[in-house]
Structures are given as structure tokens and as C-alpha cells.
Image (cartoon, rainbow, N blue to C red; front, side, top):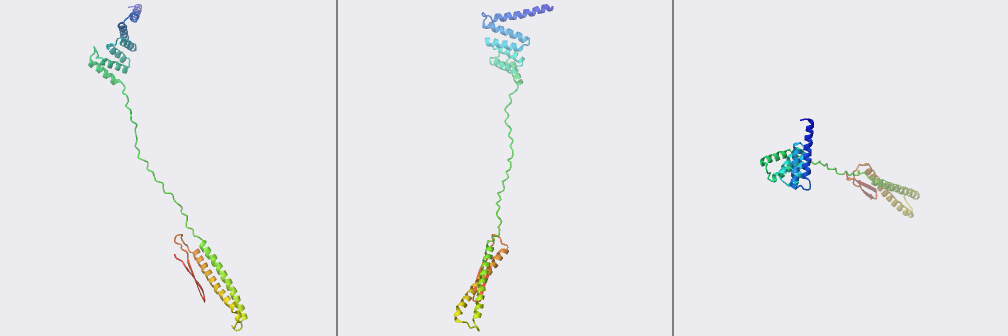
Length: 261
């Protein structure tokens, strides 16, 4: 056949196809006639490999006639067009309608094969929880309380030394006055015989002498105690105050200092 004849034949096929469709969709065409027109167009598109157009025509035919056979044709067109999920839906609807004209086992194998090709929905993966051992917590050391170092108090030895010095000076002063009085009485008495009128001065001098001895003795004892307390090392816990004692007799005074260690 010449090229001009092929062109004329192709043009004739297109004209016939358009005329059939136009006739089927004319106002006087019935629903079955329109559905048949969509079915024939779908078959032609399927033969030409235009699967998307074929699926559209088969779907339009099914919407009009509700014939289950069209679901199988729709599934074939969708499957060949790579629309596997829609094809599976069409096949399952066709199977639910009884799969007229198709072997059920063959249809089931086709459905299973198609379902196997579909990507499976990924199951939700639970978040991985990594259990880590608890970090050991080192307890904080108790706060250090700085206790003030036991410093020796100088109040006691200073007091003892000061008081002792004052008493000693007072005793010495009285001793000097008594000595002066005795010297004066000696000058006024001849041969150890004194005027009775001077007896009062002699008694007063004797009393001052005793008082001076007492004050001097107490002062010396206090000075000694203060020196001992100042020089001996003592802690704040075991230090004890010295015990100072004094005793006076007619012949003089004596002091005693007792320390505990």
C-alpha cells in the first residue's frame, strides 16, 4: 500500500472513532450506548498502549453501566500503566462482585502478585531507649568549721603582775615609813627606855610594819603567780587558774602558789 493510501486509512479510522463517540454522546443516545462507546474507546487505547486513556474510558463506562466486567478491564489498564495500588483496588472490587467470566484462582494469583509488589507500609519503629547507669554522685564533704585556735589569754598574768607590783610598792612604802618612825623613836629614846607618851607612835609603827609586810608578801606572791602563768605553756582546755594562798604571823608573812598540770 502506498503512503497516501496509509494516510487515508488512518484518517478514516480516526473519523470513524470520532463519529462513534459523537453518536454515543448525542442527546438521543441511551446510557448503555454511551457506556459501550467508552468501552470500545478504552479497548482501542489499550491496544495502542495508551493505558491512562484506556483506564479513563473504562472508568467512565463503569460509572454509567456498573458492569463488574469493566472493573477487570480497568484493573488491567491501571496495572500496565504502573498504577498498582489503584489496579489492586479494581481487582478486589471485581473479585467481590463474583469475578464473572474470569477464573477466580487466576484472579487471586494476580491480586497476590500485585500486592507483593506494593511497598509495605513501614511499621512504626519504637524509639530506642538506651539505659545508662546512673552517674555516681559523690557526696559533698561536710563544711569545715575552722575553730579558732586556742590562744592564751594574757589577761590573768597581766592582772597578777600589775596587782602584785602595786601591792609590793605599797608594802615597800609602808616599810620605809616604819623604818623612818623607828629611827626617830630610837633617837628620842635613851638606853632603850622611851617616854610613855611615845608608846602610841611605836604601836602605830608596828601596825604599819605588819601591814607593809602583808602587802609586800601578797605582791610578791601575785608577781610570782603571774610570771608562772605567763611563762608556762598551757592549752585552752586544761589550763587552770593557779591557787594562791597567803599566811601571816607575828614574825612575818608567807605566800603559796599551787598550779595543776
